[in-house]
Length: 323
Image (cartoon, rainbow, N blue to C red; front, side, top):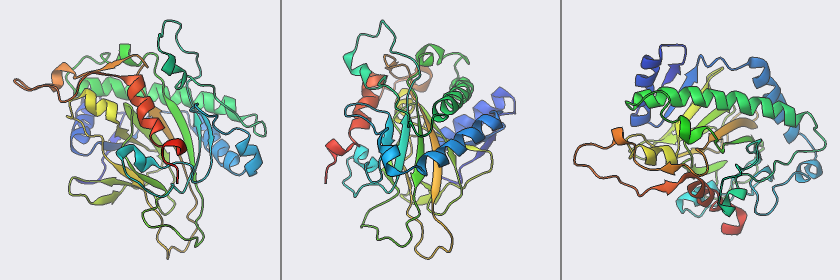
């Protein structure tokens, strides 16, 4: 496993598809440039993320995630991502704000559990511009994923529109993350900014800054590698659902956000924005035909995309991982 490759989406789709397939097979991670996202929309979202986490705690907590819901403010040390892989760790050293679909559940969706992924978005009254800014950014990122999924389909030997019916009502989440400067504060044994985990859905887009203590990926030899911040790029990684869909042809790689070195001589405050793309709630995740070799059997039973997502998410929350 080498460095995370950088793929220029301005190349021909066939070239991009081949590069994406190779990266997803070998590493499960790549970075994209040439994505043509509106830089003004990106910057407004980045500025709003900084403004939100600068609010007083009372203003942030007024938009806290309600019990049983998915979206809103997640306080500092409220989550343990490593719990999704069955690990017991101290809480993660981060705070979050999560946003879900801006549409109601489809009227024909006959599954009461879907109310979780379609739970209401909560917005801070102290920052009224946040909702329109992140609505626009959510739409930009969803369009980028559509472009990526078309190239991915080609890389799998499918038509570019193959994933379309499975993601036309996607249940994706946008999450802004703040990792405060630790300022010499003690860190518990095994504690990280974000515990080792794999992502749950189809794929993730990540915008990250270059502060110390950043994203790392685990290779097949159990060695951790830094994923450098590339100006203008988005990190892309395969999620559990997509790995399962491809019968593990593509890797859902374990990753984490490290604690910065104790001797670093600058601020370790870190911000990032992640777009967790998910298939339609009622999409059936089962082995893609082109990912099954002759005589081979699917490694996984079919599973509903929504239930898979919900079970993974709930395993990381305080009720399931209390101290």
